[in-house]
Amino acid sequence: MPARQSFYAESLAEASTTSTTPQVKATLTFTPDANATYWLIASGAFVCTAAAGRATIAVHHVDAALDLLLQGGQVKESSSPLDWIPCFGIAGLSFGSASGEQSIEVRYASETDGDTTKIRDVRVLVIKADAADRFAASDDEGQTASTTYQDKTTLSFTPETAGDYLVIGNAAMAMDANNTAMRGRLSHTTASLTYGDRIWYAKDAWWFQPFAVMEKLSLAASPQTFKLQFRSNSGTLCYCRDARILALRLNAFEG
Image (cartoon, rainbow, N blue to C red; front, top):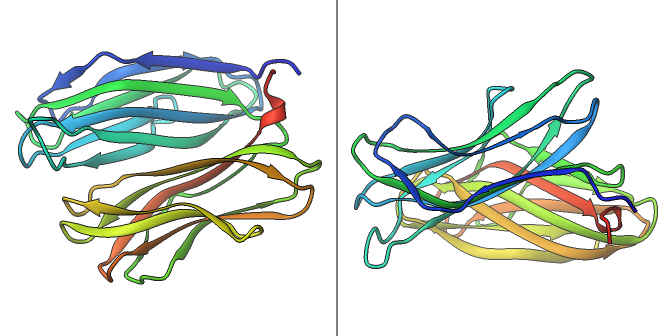
């Protein structure tokens, strides 16, 4: 099995800004194959050191003028020791016959001028899709005050042959009130199994932070359904957007 085409960039050292204008921390530039689909996986950590300050981080597709991921938040502890907010996300990229060179930037900024926002451990990976991979996305904002799980994204497919998949679920979640909580999970409804069910507290309302879960699963050559779901923990309105599920066929990787 030949290696999948892939492109990678990282910028691990700590950097900072006091500006509300987005600053570029890392750039991945690559030339995709014609008429091809790629998967993007990005991660990092960011923080605003002001006691009540807020920071944002975006993974931006320069050529499409589009934020593939946009997350932000306020830390619970801005010093001694400093909390770091994780950033993680997946996205799909599709290109035509003459797309040319593409650039992906990781950008960060403060919400208020003069507040210091820091960033570190930024990594961006783009890999070419295999015909056996599957992807589903629901990027619009959903909301619920229910304590019963609600479906946000559904991925249904039938593998051509039985085999191993890495299934990744990812979304951005927010609450309608400070210091309230919600939950997210990835449900493999075919197998009556769930992954990643955990409580998530928001110190500051309306700032979207990541939910992420991944599992290596052996799937039969029969219909499979996965759902990314969310709910309120105690009846407070909560929100979910950029909800995506990626199933990577593992034997399509070298080795």
